[in-house]
Length: 238
Image (cartoon, rainbow, N blue to C red):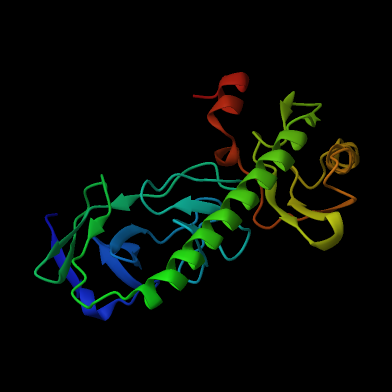
């Protein structure tokens, strides 16, 4: 399909979002300052919508398990998601917003006609800087946790539990507490207790972690689709 009008610039305030359809695909139109993004309204981890997910810098966070996706590229920025979401091209024409089903190459920029005073600009800049710093700190912590969990190997498949897609979410709590939501390849997995124990120990060896809590869930159930490309290559799945 070509570009179709979905809204006017005035309809979408800074930080606002609008549910739209792009060639019958549910999508979100999101505004950050002067820039507009359109992404598929779907978390690739569990198939749930991203509609109510909070914005963290230039990313949207899944409200269920915390996967984050870059608004500009659709790239999955952290586990439990391993695949990105679709992005859609956006154009601004005379203060009207048009969206196409073609992949986005850059966010659309609107011309802001209202004056921006130094009084308004300062808190906005500070807020954006704080949000960016928070996002960077969270991303660094996630990388540290996932690196530790990659040391845990499923003894039957000989693939680490992160690349297998067993980790649904890792949440840092106050006081060095970390909570992991994960699954197993099957409810009757004989190596389950061993994997859970090793996952907890791997995290508690980190200086930043005092106590790790592992919560097992079978919803949604694990499927091979959750594996990374590295895991598929290792197992010979193409």
